[in-house]
Length: 46
Image (cartoon, rainbow, N blue to C red):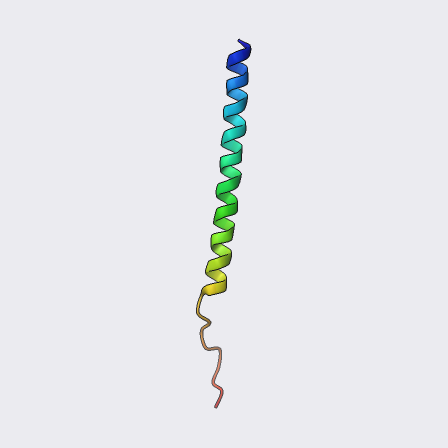
């Protein structure tokens, strides 16, 4: 019984860590996309 509880706890923690890592990777990817997007012209300089 204790082994099953331990394995369940490890699986839950592992899943949570994987979820947090995916969220961090997605946030970093969005930041890079924002930083590297071309800037559209906002007005004429003439």
